[in-house]
Image (cartoon, rainbow, N blue to C red; front, side, top):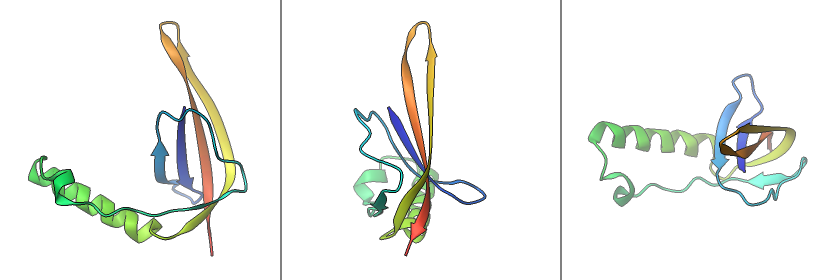
Length: 100
């Protein structure tokens, strides 16, 4: 199961994705507290310099938008992808609004 979180705005801004979830701990109306962790050089130094810069910039943008913020789950969408030779994958999308 994959759970995606989006900010409920015109662009449906992605917040984050949780992969390989065994169960869904979230319900509509839940308030989720967000925190964006710091990136440390040991986490990105093994990559090429241009990619390192992109990773740092992307993480800084996430911090500006979501660090120490709370969102409320206001809309839910579920889908299942499958084919004959592969296990089905359930994806749940939550659309969120900022909470003061």
